[in-house]
Length: 158
Length: 434
Image (cartoon, rainbow over the protein chains, first blue to last red):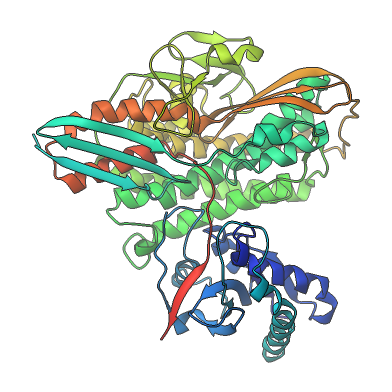
């Protein structure tokens, strides 16, 4: 059986940036609805440790706040090769690194999962704060069901 | 000499946290040269007040996502000191394994991911893939992964340990798990030597800069001190009264920085891998000695850039040390020990350990109910800030004739050599669909 990893990424202290963790926790509560071979990983703020997490799985779904100039709460399931990073790192360190670059590195080192999807959610506000913005909060439940269905579909394809 | 230089690096990259370098030269005269730390204070000491002694470790672990094991151990030692608890030999050995794991995690991360790009002439670790250095990078990733697995096994997590508790461990690794780890550590010795060989081939790219300073760290008659030892200065020797650490680590505030500076016998002192090497190199295990010799690293070495090399030497020592302690545990029989029982009482305790960036102190005063009434934490990076500033003041006149970009890079490399760990940051993706 293939090992599937669902990895939530984000900083819950930066409001909507934490949506990846919020959705991960909601999925964990409903883990009985999902196949047994799915692991749930809190990837925190990513960084180089993500490299080691990726190496453990055959299939990975990363949940993360992604600014793609969409509507707040809009979600997209995409592959890392579908996008170009526009991120300008403020401070390249192991605390802050572009996860697309970590994925690239993982691929070049030939240890990246054969299937890797990013479930990106458009944030509204990533300033300091422990709560998700009101506009995003209203769609959290529907995002969770949408994500759950996508994970089930990915698992059924294998 | 350059007549005018205007360098304003805000912030220095490839360090943990935010620090700025300001250099302003007008008509050949240095008008401003500062290493600035501009981060907001985090009030951890205030957060501890009123908390039960059982909670202090898990709160202080969060001070740092890299040194969370080190903060946990300093916290436990301070708490146990205040409560008058003696830990078992097995706990002391497992804690040594934990501190080795963290030193390995942090050192390989710094040398491999953050400092190596300077030596290899690239902006970050990512462009190294696909070059002739791919193999070396793979080895570094493998070593980092091993250090993470070791933290996971001993401490229950890669970061922010959960098995380290007051009086012992909440869960103990099995003999089988320890022997598997030993096998991996043995394999890692060869890999590390190969990585060291590559670093040695480019180590000449570090500036040949020397400035005499004071080095402070723990030292012990029994071992290369990391978990236990006496506060020791390269200028004034041992200070066995650990509760009087403030007589050595004199912290003060400077206008340019929200982080404190520290001094002792001189204007500044250095802590960390190079300080420990300078104080205790004779106690390194044999292969670590061999690697130090390969680099020609001998005490006392006054070149701060060699802190990177000292980290690599310590990495090898940590592997050898861990293998020895695993052998000890296996031969004496691993016991399923429960943590020592604790009873709340009033008292003051001080815990001092060496963490990757240097000597770390936690000092707690507990009330009769076991709640924290007062706390003080002295963090290694803060002890190094003044030394970075003094290094810059002596280094800049030596490189002032070089092009501005080169001066800037040299100063950034100097800061990175100290492996400063200033705080934590945020993360989100910004993409455009193609």
